[in-house]
Length: 426
Ligand code: FCB
Image 1 (cartoon, rainbow, N blue to C red):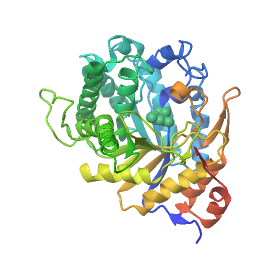
Image 2: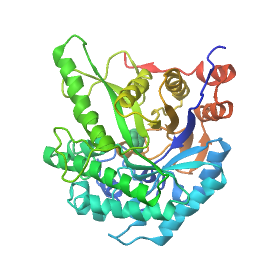
Image 3: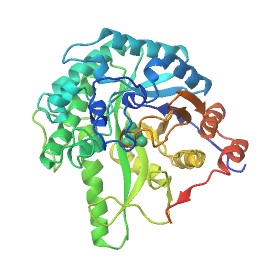
Image 4: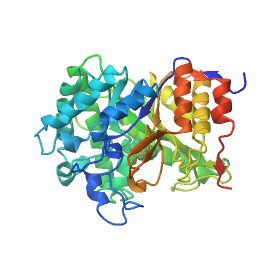
């Protein structure tokens, strides 16, 4: 039947991150960064966002109404540990309450411990560049896993170590705005060691837990496949940006430019491979680039559905095991092409023979998008920031329909996908 396909064993969920939806004035690196004019394109701050902290019950009810069974959410470290080693029982109780609500609604959580968000006291100590970072992060992880383990069995330690480290310590566009290759390598190493130690610790506290990293993976394509310089750039960028760090985090092997940390043994440090996939980079030198005459989203990122299979294939060859697509989504203010985007990425996954068992769409609702602030809309649910009204978009209805039917029916294809069209950067 035209356009239809089944999802098989692939289960659908949605993803969020604490700093991007909660609102309020937690003392984080991002709240501080947003206070400097010019840092955030629209001058907004995470203190509004989706006001989720005050609307948890309504948002859970909305997830349930949409038929969503898997929810990836983050914790705001600065809320639960406002001062070094001092934990805020009320904030922890808030998350317990939220997780109980999800459980009652039959929604399974996947909880992220670190999603670009540092408490300011940690940032001031040097964040992940500090020699104390691993001990500080594992203390936080231990407290949270102990508090939440009755309600959570799936964890992401660190979200997108490569995006975080390069933007914060190489390009200097994210807090703390540093540009130093030496510090970058230190941060990368500490993030990997923090993940490995947290992986071991979580398994001690909760032997049946499933633990992984949400790796940001991109396709790097040479602009001209015959050009040796373009080819070398694509290979080098992929290696430095994602391959070396994914190896360190997955199996504890630190190849150049890293050095093997003392006392750290290679092993298997993942129960699933988490993949955040958004786009393809087409390169001809050591700089990012986008091909011409290709479909793009509102931020100019190429829409390249085959890429989700390409990155998952590469990961699966090196680190076999279950794959969770921990994020995939697109900036589409008018919801003009999100349904097609969903359709094509899911179809590519289902047609591959890969062990992809979860897909979490980024994002549940429109949210505070880091440097883009409130200006880039990734949600399946529209958010009116002024009134905080939520309204399910057509793509959100399509998503619910796919969950209900375990796939795309030809009717859903006609209703949501047939008229959903990309624009190109021609
Ligand atoms: C990823 C981030 C996520 C969101 C999406 C659009 O890099 O993990 O928080 O910003 O991009």
